[in-house]
Length: 505
Image 1 (cartoon, rainbow, N blue to C red):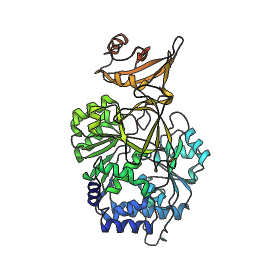
Image 2: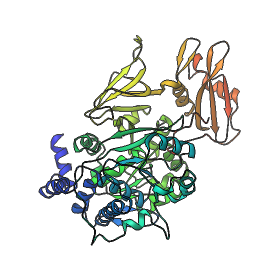
Image 3: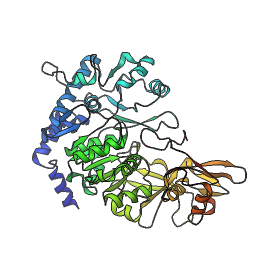
Image 4: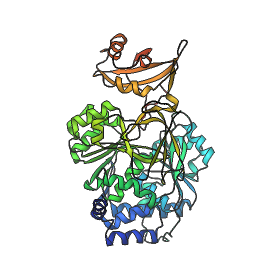
Protein backbone atom coordinates (compact mmCIF):
# COMPACT_ATOMS: atom_id res chain seq x y z
CA UNK A 1 0.00 0.00 0.00
CA UNK A 2 2.86 2.39 0.82
CA UNK A 3 4.46 1.71 -2.57
CA UNK A 4 1.16 2.36 -4.34
CA UNK A 5 0.71 5.63 -2.43
CA UNK A 6 4.24 6.77 -3.30
CA UNK A 7 3.53 6.04 -6.97
CA UNK A 8 0.36 8.10 -6.78
CA UNK A 9 2.18 11.03 -5.18
CA UNK A 10 4.86 10.75 -7.85
CA UNK A 11 2.20 10.75 -10.59
CA UNK A 12 0.74 14.00 -9.21
CA UNK A 13 4.30 15.45 -9.42
CA UNK A 14 4.20 16.27 -5.71
CA UNK A 15 6.78 13.62 -4.81
CA UNK A 16 9.33 14.57 -7.46
CA UNK A 17 12.42 16.73 -7.17
CA UNK A 18 10.61 19.58 -8.90
CA UNK A 19 7.49 19.12 -6.76
CA UNK A 20 9.44 19.15 -3.49
CA UNK A 21 11.41 22.17 -4.66
CA UNK A 22 8.17 24.05 -5.47
CA UNK A 23 6.76 23.10 -2.07
CA UNK A 24 9.78 24.49 -0.22
CA UNK A 25 9.81 27.56 -2.46
CA UNK A 26 6.14 28.29 -1.73
CA UNK A 27 6.56 27.90 2.02
CA UNK A 28 9.72 30.05 2.00
CA UNK A 29 8.21 32.90 -0.01
CA UNK A 30 4.56 32.75 1.06
CA UNK A 31 4.30 30.88 4.33
CA UNK A 32 2.08 27.96 5.24
CA UNK A 33 -1.27 29.25 4.01
CA UNK A 34 -3.75 28.40 1.29
CA UNK A 35 -1.92 30.51 -1.28
CA UNK A 36 1.08 28.19 -0.98
CA UNK A 37 -1.05 25.36 -2.40
CA UNK A 38 -2.12 27.53 -5.33
CA UNK A 39 1.46 28.68 -5.97
CA UNK A 40 2.69 25.08 -6.13
CA UNK A 41 -0.09 24.19 -8.60
CA UNK A 42 0.70 27.27 -10.70
CA UNK A 43 4.35 26.26 -10.96
CA UNK A 44 3.69 22.55 -11.61
CA UNK A 45 0.63 22.92 -13.89
CA UNK A 46 0.86 26.47 -15.19
CA UNK A 47 -1.07 25.94 -18.46
CA UNK A 48 -3.70 23.58 -17.11
CA UNK A 49 -7.21 24.96 -16.73
CA UNK A 50 -7.92 25.53 -13.04
CA UNK A 51 -11.38 27.12 -12.90
CA UNK A 52 -14.30 27.29 -15.27
CA UNK A 53 -17.47 29.12 -14.19
CA UNK A 54 -20.26 31.01 -15.93
CA UNK A 55 -18.04 34.08 -16.41
CA UNK A 56 -14.49 33.00 -17.11
CA UNK A 57 -11.89 30.29 -17.59
CA UNK A 58 -8.54 30.54 -15.81
CA UNK A 59 -5.34 28.51 -15.95
CA UNK A 60 -3.52 27.77 -12.71
CA UNK A 61 -0.94 30.42 -13.54
CA UNK A 62 -3.56 33.11 -14.19
CA UNK A 63 -5.56 32.15 -11.09
CA UNK A 64 -2.47 32.45 -8.92
CA UNK A 65 -1.43 35.76 -10.50
CA UNK A 66 -4.91 37.25 -10.06
CA UNK A 67 -5.19 35.99 -6.47
CA UNK A 68 -1.80 37.58 -5.70
CA UNK A 69 -2.94 40.84 -7.35
CA UNK A 70 -6.10 40.75 -5.26
CA UNK A 71 -4.07 40.24 -2.08
CA UNK A 72 -1.96 43.29 -2.93
CA UNK A 73 -5.06 45.34 -3.70
CA UNK A 74 -6.83 44.33 -0.50
CA UNK A 75 -3.74 45.29 1.48
CA UNK A 76 -3.24 48.63 -0.26
CA UNK A 77 -6.86 49.74 -0.78
CA UNK A 78 -8.56 48.20 2.26
CA UNK A 79 -5.70 47.91 4.71
CA UNK A 80 -6.32 44.23 5.39
CA UNK A 81 -3.58 42.91 7.66
CA UNK A 82 -2.63 39.68 9.45
CA UNK A 83 -5.01 38.56 12.23
CA UNK A 84 -7.88 40.68 10.92
CA UNK A 85 -11.24 39.00 10.27
CA UNK A 86 -12.55 38.95 6.71
CA UNK A 87 -15.98 37.50 5.93
CA UNK A 88 -16.45 36.04 2.44
CA UNK A 89 -20.16 35.66 1.63
CA UNK A 90 -20.13 34.24 -1.89
CA UNK A 91 -21.49 31.42 -3.98
CA UNK A 92 -19.29 29.25 -6.21
CA UNK A 93 -17.47 31.44 -8.72
CA UNK A 94 -13.95 32.52 -9.64
CA UNK A 95 -14.03 35.78 -7.65
CA UNK A 96 -14.86 33.87 -4.47
CA UNK A 97 -12.01 31.44 -5.08
CA UNK A 98 -9.54 34.29 -5.64
CA UNK A 99 -10.79 35.96 -2.46
CA UNK A 100 -10.26 32.86 -0.31
CA UNK A 101 -6.65 32.49 -1.45
CA UNK A 102 -5.91 36.24 -1.32
CA UNK A 103 -7.19 36.77 2.23
CA UNK A 104 -5.27 33.71 3.42
CA UNK A 105 -2.15 35.10 1.70
CA UNK A 106 -2.43 38.25 3.82
CA UNK A 107 -2.45 36.22 7.04
CA UNK A 108 -5.98 37.35 7.87
CA UNK A 109 -8.64 35.00 9.20
CA UNK A 110 -11.01 33.76 6.48
CA UNK A 111 -14.65 33.42 7.57
CA UNK A 112 -16.82 31.63 5.01
CA UNK A 113 -20.39 32.90 5.30
CA UNK A 114 -23.54 31.51 3.69
CA UNK A 115 -24.80 34.34 1.41
CA UNK A 116 -28.36 33.18 2.05
CA UNK A 117 -28.25 34.03 5.74
CA UNK A 118 -30.91 36.44 6.94
CA UNK A 119 -30.25 40.03 7.98
CA UNK A 120 -30.80 39.05 11.63
CA UNK A 121 -28.25 36.24 11.38
CA UNK A 122 -25.60 38.44 9.74
CA UNK A 123 -26.24 41.19 12.27
CA UNK A 124 -25.88 38.72 15.15
CA UNK A 125 -22.63 37.29 13.74
CA UNK A 126 -21.28 40.80 13.16
CA UNK A 127 -22.11 41.69 16.77
CA UNK A 128 -20.32 38.54 17.95
CA UNK A 129 -17.23 38.57 15.71
CA UNK A 130 -16.82 42.22 14.55
CA UNK A 131 -15.50 41.57 11.04
CA UNK A 132 -12.93 43.98 9.65
CA UNK A 133 -14.13 43.49 6.07
CA UNK A 134 -16.79 41.79 3.96
CA UNK A 135 -16.28 40.41 0.45
CA UNK A 136 -19.73 39.47 -0.82
CA UNK A 137 -21.95 38.61 -3.75
CA UNK A 138 -23.62 41.65 -5.35
CA UNK A 139 -27.06 40.14 -4.71
CA UNK A 140 -26.74 40.85 -0.99
CA UNK A 141 -25.49 44.44 -1.39
CA UNK A 142 -28.88 45.86 -0.28
CA UNK A 143 -28.71 43.76 2.90
CA UNK A 144 -25.11 44.87 3.57
CA UNK A 145 -26.12 48.51 3.11
CA UNK A 146 -29.23 48.11 5.28
CA UNK A 147 -27.03 46.81 8.12
CA UNK A 148 -24.69 49.84 7.69
CA UNK A 149 -21.78 47.59 6.73
CA UNK A 150 -21.15 49.07 3.28
CA UNK A 151 -18.18 51.14 4.47
CA UNK A 152 -16.20 47.92 5.02
CA UNK A 153 -17.50 45.79 2.17
CA UNK A 154 -16.59 45.06 -1.46
CA UNK A 155 -18.82 43.14 -3.88
CA UNK A 156 -17.40 40.21 -5.82
CA UNK A 157 -18.50 41.77 -9.12
CA UNK A 158 -19.59 45.26 -10.16
CA UNK A 159 -19.70 46.85 -13.64
CA UNK A 160 -18.29 50.23 -12.53
CA UNK A 161 -17.37 50.39 -8.83
CA UNK A 162 -14.50 48.68 -7.03
CA UNK A 163 -14.99 44.91 -6.86
CA UNK A 164 -13.03 41.76 -6.07
CA UNK A 165 -12.95 40.91 -9.76
CA UNK A 166 -11.60 44.32 -10.81
CA UNK A 167 -8.90 44.40 -8.12
CA UNK A 168 -7.73 40.91 -9.12
CA UNK A 169 -7.19 42.10 -12.70
CA UNK A 170 -5.06 45.09 -11.67
CA UNK A 171 -1.36 45.06 -12.57
CA UNK A 172 1.19 44.16 -9.93
CA UNK A 173 4.07 45.75 -11.85
CA UNK A 174 4.56 48.68 -9.45
CA UNK A 175 3.09 47.06 -6.35
CA UNK A 176 5.09 46.55 -3.18
CA UNK A 177 5.67 42.79 -2.96
CA UNK A 178 3.92 40.77 -0.32
CA UNK A 179 5.96 39.41 2.54
CA UNK A 180 5.87 35.93 4.02
CA UNK A 181 3.16 35.75 6.69
CA UNK A 182 2.05 33.43 9.45
CA UNK A 183 -1.12 31.69 8.42
CA UNK A 184 -4.51 32.85 9.62
CA UNK A 185 -7.50 30.69 10.46
CA UNK A 186 -10.01 29.30 8.00
CA UNK A 187 -13.42 29.42 9.64
CA UNK A 188 -16.57 27.69 8.39
CA UNK A 189 -19.84 28.78 9.97
CA UNK A 190 -21.75 25.68 11.07
CA UNK A 191 -25.50 25.15 11.21
CA UNK A 192 -27.80 28.11 10.97
CA UNK A 193 -31.12 26.29 10.61
CA UNK A 194 -31.83 26.02 14.35
CA UNK A 195 -30.22 29.22 15.55
CA UNK A 196 -27.14 31.37 15.18
CA UNK A 197 -24.39 29.73 13.06
CA UNK A 198 -21.25 28.95 15.06
CA UNK A 199 -17.64 29.29 13.87
CA UNK A 200 -15.59 26.11 13.40
CA UNK A 201 -12.01 27.18 12.77
CA UNK A 202 -8.71 25.51 11.97
CA UNK A 203 -5.30 26.71 10.80
CA UNK A 204 -4.07 25.45 7.43
CA UNK A 205 -1.42 22.82 8.14
CA UNK A 206 0.41 20.54 5.75
CA UNK A 207 0.43 17.72 8.30
CA UNK A 208 -3.29 18.08 9.05
CA UNK A 209 -4.10 18.18 5.33
CA UNK A 210 -2.18 15.00 4.52
CA UNK A 211 -4.35 12.23 6.08
CA UNK A 212 -7.63 13.18 4.30
CA UNK A 213 -5.68 13.81 1.10
CA UNK A 214 -3.97 10.41 1.31
CA UNK A 215 -7.33 8.71 1.96
CA UNK A 216 -8.78 10.25 -1.20
CA UNK A 217 -5.73 9.14 -3.18
CA UNK A 218 -5.47 5.60 -1.84
CA UNK A 219 -9.17 4.72 -1.49
CA UNK A 220 -10.95 6.94 -4.04
CA UNK A 221 -8.03 7.19 -6.53
CA UNK A 222 -8.76 10.82 -7.36
CA UNK A 223 -5.32 11.17 -8.92
CA UNK A 224 -6.59 9.19 -11.95
CA UNK A 225 -9.10 11.86 -13.00
CA UNK A 226 -8.71 15.38 -14.34
CA UNK A 227 -12.19 16.99 -14.55
CA UNK A 228 -14.19 17.80 -11.41
CA UNK A 229 -17.53 19.54 -10.93
CA UNK A 230 -17.74 21.00 -7.42
CA UNK A 231 -21.48 21.34 -6.93
CA UNK A 232 -21.22 21.71 -3.14
CA UNK A 233 -20.96 25.32 -1.89
CA UNK A 234 -17.38 26.34 -1.19
CA UNK A 235 -18.55 28.27 1.87
CA UNK A 236 -19.26 24.83 3.36
CA UNK A 237 -16.46 22.62 4.72
CA UNK A 238 -17.06 19.88 2.15
CA UNK A 239 -16.95 22.28 -0.79
CA UNK A 240 -13.85 24.06 0.48
CA UNK A 241 -12.05 20.75 1.00
CA UNK A 242 -12.98 19.66 -2.54
CA UNK A 243 -11.56 22.91 -3.94
CA UNK A 244 -8.25 22.50 -2.08
CA UNK A 245 -7.92 18.84 -3.07
CA UNK A 246 -8.62 19.78 -6.69
CA UNK A 247 -5.95 22.50 -6.62
CA UNK A 248 -3.42 20.11 -5.07
CA UNK A 249 -4.05 17.59 -7.86
CA UNK A 250 -4.05 20.22 -10.61
CA UNK A 251 -7.60 19.28 -11.63
CA UNK A 252 -9.82 21.15 -14.07
CA UNK A 253 -12.63 22.37 -11.81
CA UNK A 254 -16.11 23.47 -12.85
CA UNK A 255 -18.33 25.74 -10.76
CA UNK A 256 -21.89 27.04 -11.03
CA UNK A 257 -23.29 29.71 -8.72
CA UNK A 258 -26.53 27.80 -8.18
CA UNK A 259 -27.31 24.13 -8.56
CA UNK A 260 -29.95 23.17 -11.09
CA UNK A 261 -30.41 19.49 -11.96
CA UNK A 262 -31.16 20.14 -15.65
CA UNK A 263 -28.18 22.43 -16.07
CA UNK A 264 -25.88 20.15 -14.06
CA UNK A 265 -26.75 17.12 -16.17
CA UNK A 266 -26.07 19.10 -19.36
CA UNK A 267 -22.72 20.32 -18.03
CA UNK A 268 -21.60 16.81 -17.06
CA UNK A 269 -22.67 15.34 -20.39
CA UNK A 270 -21.16 18.12 -22.55
CA UNK A 271 -17.81 18.33 -20.72
CA UNK A 272 -17.58 14.58 -19.99
CA UNK A 273 -16.88 15.35 -16.34
CA UNK A 274 -15.36 12.47 -14.41
CA UNK A 275 -15.75 13.49 -10.74
CA UNK A 276 -18.48 15.36 -8.90
CA UNK A 277 -18.83 16.46 -5.29
CA UNK A 278 -22.41 16.93 -4.15
CA UNK A 279 -24.97 16.49 -1.40
CA UNK A 280 -27.51 13.64 -1.66
CA UNK A 281 -30.34 16.02 -2.59
CA UNK A 282 -28.44 17.04 -5.73
CA UNK A 283 -27.69 13.43 -6.63
CA UNK A 284 -31.33 12.41 -6.28
CA UNK A 285 -32.54 15.27 -8.48
CA UNK A 286 -30.02 14.53 -11.23
CA UNK A 287 -30.75 10.82 -11.13
CA UNK A 288 -34.47 11.52 -11.50
CA UNK A 289 -33.89 14.06 -14.27
CA UNK A 290 -31.48 12.34 -16.65
CA UNK A 291 -29.33 9.43 -15.42
CA UNK A 292 -27.91 8.83 -18.92
CA UNK A 293 -26.29 12.29 -18.82
CA UNK A 294 -24.19 11.09 -15.86
CA UNK A 295 -22.53 8.23 -17.73
CA UNK A 296 -19.10 9.94 -17.82
CA UNK A 297 -18.89 10.09 -14.02
CA UNK A 298 -16.29 7.77 -12.53
CA UNK A 299 -16.43 9.13 -8.98
CA UNK A 300 -19.43 10.58 -7.17
CA UNK A 301 -18.45 11.98 -3.77
CA UNK A 302 -21.54 12.46 -1.62
CA UNK A 303 -21.35 14.32 1.68
CA UNK A 304 -22.74 17.16 3.75
CA UNK A 305 -25.98 15.30 4.60
CA UNK A 306 -27.06 11.68 5.21
CA UNK A 307 -27.12 9.47 2.11
CA UNK A 308 -30.39 7.55 2.04
CA UNK A 309 -29.90 3.81 1.42
CA UNK A 310 -32.53 3.80 -1.34
CA UNK A 311 -30.66 6.57 -3.19
CA UNK A 312 -27.34 4.72 -2.79
CA UNK A 313 -28.88 1.55 -4.22
CA UNK A 314 -30.47 3.41 -7.16
CA UNK A 315 -27.17 5.18 -7.97
CA UNK A 316 -25.11 2.00 -7.89
CA UNK A 317 -27.69 0.17 -9.99
CA UNK A 318 -27.91 2.85 -12.69
CA UNK A 319 -24.33 4.20 -12.76
CA UNK A 320 -22.22 1.32 -11.47
CA UNK A 321 -19.68 1.26 -8.59
CA UNK A 322 -18.86 4.98 -8.66
CA UNK A 323 -20.49 6.24 -5.45
CA UNK A 324 -18.50 7.14 -2.32
CA UNK A 325 -20.10 8.39 0.88
CA UNK A 326 -17.94 10.87 2.82
CA UNK A 327 -18.87 11.57 6.42
CA UNK A 328 -17.54 14.57 8.27
CA UNK A 329 -18.54 17.59 10.31
CA UNK A 330 -17.42 21.21 10.29
CA UNK A 331 -15.59 20.59 13.58
CA UNK A 332 -14.12 17.16 12.81
CA UNK A 333 -13.52 17.54 9.07
CA UNK A 334 -13.65 14.57 6.69
CA UNK A 335 -13.14 11.44 8.79
CA UNK A 336 -15.22 8.41 7.62
CA UNK A 337 -15.50 6.88 4.15
CA UNK A 338 -17.77 4.26 2.56
CA UNK A 339 -16.61 2.86 -0.80
CA UNK A 340 -18.95 1.40 -3.47
CA UNK A 341 -18.14 -2.18 -2.47
CA UNK A 342 -19.43 -1.55 1.06
CA UNK A 343 -22.45 0.47 -0.11
CA UNK A 344 -23.48 -2.41 -2.36
CA UNK A 345 -23.63 -4.72 0.69
CA UNK A 346 -24.73 -2.17 3.29
CA UNK A 347 -26.16 0.95 1.57
CA UNK A 348 -27.10 2.38 4.98
CA UNK A 349 -23.49 2.40 6.25
CA UNK A 350 -21.26 5.49 6.42
CA UNK A 351 -18.17 3.27 6.27
CA UNK A 352 -15.04 3.13 8.40
CA UNK A 353 -12.70 5.80 9.80
CA UNK A 354 -9.86 6.87 7.55
CA UNK A 355 -6.27 6.53 8.78
CA UNK A 356 -5.61 8.97 11.63
CA UNK A 357 -9.19 9.04 12.92
CA UNK A 358 -10.41 7.46 16.15
CA UNK A 359 -14.10 6.75 16.68
CA UNK A 360 -15.96 6.23 19.93
CA UNK A 361 -19.66 5.53 20.46
CA UNK A 362 -20.89 6.84 23.78
CA UNK A 363 -23.87 4.74 24.82
CA UNK A 364 -25.73 4.12 28.06
CA UNK A 365 -24.31 0.65 28.74
CA UNK A 366 -26.93 -1.14 26.62
CA UNK A 367 -26.43 -4.89 26.29
CA UNK A 368 -27.71 -4.94 22.71
CA UNK A 369 -25.50 -6.63 20.11
CA UNK A 370 -24.78 -3.27 18.43
CA UNK A 371 -25.57 -0.61 21.08
CA UNK A 372 -26.48 2.82 19.74
CA UNK A 373 -24.94 5.99 21.09
CA UNK A 374 -23.49 9.35 20.20
CA UNK A 375 -20.70 9.24 17.61
CA UNK A 376 -17.52 10.94 18.83
CA UNK A 377 -14.48 11.68 16.66
CA UNK A 378 -10.86 12.42 17.47
CA UNK A 379 -8.12 13.37 14.99
CA UNK A 380 -5.17 15.74 14.74
CA UNK A 381 -6.91 17.92 12.13
CA UNK A 382 -10.18 18.50 13.99
CA UNK A 383 -10.98 21.85 15.63
CA UNK A 384 -10.64 20.29 19.08
CA UNK A 385 -6.84 19.91 18.99
CA UNK A 386 -6.99 16.11 19.16
CA UNK A 387 -9.82 16.15 21.71
CA UNK A 388 -12.94 14.01 21.40
CA UNK A 389 -15.61 15.86 19.41
CA UNK A 390 -19.26 15.00 19.94
CA UNK A 391 -20.86 14.98 16.51
CA UNK A 392 -24.47 15.00 17.69
CA UNK A 393 -25.13 11.95 15.50
CA UNK A 394 -26.46 8.66 16.85
CA UNK A 395 -24.62 5.63 15.48
CA UNK A 396 -23.68 2.01 16.04
CA UNK A 397 -20.87 -0.22 14.78
CA UNK A 398 -21.23 -3.77 13.46
CA UNK A 399 -18.85 -6.66 14.06
CA UNK A 400 -16.79 -5.75 10.95
CA UNK A 401 -16.28 -2.21 12.25
CA UNK A 402 -18.67 -0.55 9.77
CA UNK A 403 -20.49 2.48 11.15
CA UNK A 404 -24.21 3.18 10.74
CA UNK A 405 -26.13 6.37 11.54
CA UNK A 406 -29.48 6.32 13.33
CA UNK A 407 -30.22 10.04 13.27
CA UNK A 408 -29.44 13.01 15.48
CA UNK A 409 -29.24 12.86 19.26
CA UNK A 410 -31.90 15.56 19.59
CA UNK A 411 -34.16 13.80 17.05
CA UNK A 412 -34.49 10.60 19.10
CA UNK A 413 -38.06 9.95 20.26
CA UNK A 414 -38.99 8.09 23.46
CA UNK A 415 -42.30 6.36 22.75
CA UNK A 416 -43.82 4.20 25.47
CA UNK A 417 -40.39 3.75 27.04
CA UNK A 418 -38.76 2.69 23.75
CA UNK A 419 -36.00 4.71 22.08
CA UNK A 420 -37.19 5.30 18.52
CA UNK A 421 -34.96 6.70 15.79
CA UNK A 422 -36.77 8.64 13.01
CA UNK A 423 -34.04 7.93 10.45
CA UNK A 424 -34.65 4.18 10.67
CA UNK A 425 -38.30 4.66 9.66
CA UNK A 426 -37.26 7.12 6.95
CA UNK A 427 -34.92 4.51 5.44
CA UNK A 428 -37.71 1.93 5.33
CA UNK A 429 -40.26 4.32 3.83
CA UNK A 430 -37.82 5.35 1.10
CA UNK A 431 -37.81 1.75 -0.12
CA UNK A 432 -41.42 2.19 -1.27
CA UNK A 433 -41.48 2.68 -5.07
CA UNK A 434 -43.98 5.56 -4.87
CA UNK A 435 -42.19 7.62 -2.21
CA UNK A 436 -39.77 10.28 -3.45
CA UNK A 437 -38.91 11.93 -0.14
CA UNK A 438 -39.82 11.56 3.52
CA UNK A 439 -39.20 13.19 6.88
CA UNK A 440 -40.05 11.61 10.22
CA UNK A 441 -40.31 13.56 13.46
CA UNK A 442 -41.67 13.16 16.96
CA UNK A 443 -45.03 14.59 18.07
CA UNK A 444 -46.58 14.70 21.56
CA UNK A 445 -48.87 11.82 22.50
CA UNK A 446 -50.98 11.65 25.70
CA UNK A 447 -50.56 7.88 26.11
CA UNK A 448 -47.04 7.15 24.84
CA UNK A 449 -45.35 10.49 25.55
CA UNK A 450 -44.29 10.77 21.92
CA UNK A 451 -45.17 9.09 18.65
CA UNK A 452 -43.79 9.36 15.13
CA UNK A 453 -45.21 11.49 12.34
CA UNK A 454 -44.18 10.85 8.72
CA UNK A 455 -44.31 13.61 6.12
CA UNK A 456 -44.38 12.03 2.65
CA UNK A 457 -43.75 13.23 -0.90
CA UNK A 458 -45.30 10.63 -3.19
CA UNK A 459 -44.95 10.08 -6.92
CA UNK A 460 -47.34 10.32 -8.61
CA UNK A 461 -49.32 12.52 -6.20
CA UNK A 462 -52.35 10.88 -4.58
CA UNK A 463 -50.88 7.42 -5.33
CA UNK A 464 -50.88 6.60 -1.62
CA UNK A 465 -53.04 7.12 1.43
CA UNK A 466 -52.43 6.46 5.11
CA UNK A 467 -54.19 3.10 5.28
CA UNK A 468 -52.32 1.69 2.25
CA UNK A 469 -48.98 2.85 3.62
CA UNK A 470 -49.60 1.53 7.13
CA UNK A 471 -50.49 -1.87 5.69
CA UNK A 472 -47.25 -1.84 3.66
CA UNK A 473 -45.22 -0.85 6.74
CA UNK A 474 -46.68 -3.34 9.20
CA UNK A 475 -44.47 -6.34 8.29
CA UNK A 476 -41.38 -4.16 7.86
CA UNK A 477 -41.04 -2.26 11.15
CA UNK A 478 -41.60 -2.83 14.85
CA UNK A 479 -44.89 -1.80 16.43
CA UNK A 480 -43.34 1.18 18.25
CA UNK A 481 -41.86 2.43 14.92
CA UNK A 482 -45.25 2.68 13.21
CA UNK A 483 -46.17 6.33 12.59
CA UNK A 484 -49.24 7.63 14.39
CA UNK A 485 -49.78 10.26 11.68
CA UNK A 486 -48.91 10.30 7.97
CA UNK A 487 -49.12 13.60 6.12
CA UNK A 488 -48.73 14.01 2.36
CA UNK A 489 -47.16 17.17 0.97
CA UNK A 490 -45.86 18.43 -2.36
CA UNK A 491 -42.38 19.37 -1.07
CA UNK A 492 -40.11 19.37 1.97
CA UNK A 493 -38.05 22.34 3.23
CA UNK A 494 -34.28 22.09 2.70
CA UNK A 495 -31.40 24.38 3.62
CA UNK A 496 -29.09 25.83 0.97
CA UNK A 497 -26.66 23.00 1.83
CA UNK A 498 -29.23 20.34 0.93
CA UNK A 499 -30.05 19.29 4.49
CA UNK A 500 -33.63 18.75 5.62
CA UNK A 501 -34.71 21.84 7.54
CA UNK A 502 -36.43 20.18 10.49
CA UNK A 503 -37.05 23.48 12.26
CA UNK A 504 -39.00 24.78 9.26
CA UNK A 505 -40.82 21.44 8.97
